[in-house]
Length: 86
Image (cartoon, rainbow, N blue to C red; front, side, top):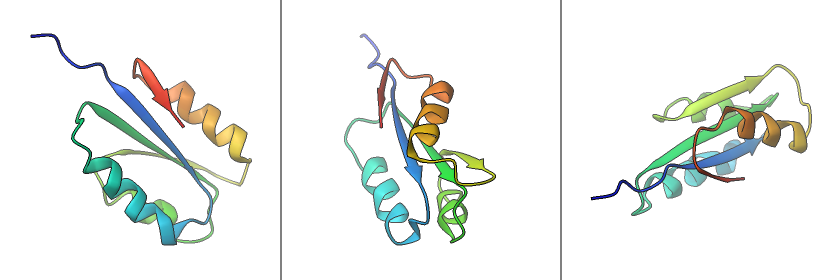
């Protein structure tokens, strides 16, 4: 039986504490399980990064807000999946 390919889901977040928990939980509840979830906390001043760390996923903290494109690129550079979704 062939193993399903790893899919990397990259979630850039900046001050998104209201949305990060349902976002992560919806991804974790997918029927496809060979997922790598990477949250890139783009210098948030709220609890986004702390909330993301509650889950068995990879969280990258950028020290200051560097913008959506940079956060995505950091996630893409970190991802190991055959397919990458931002």
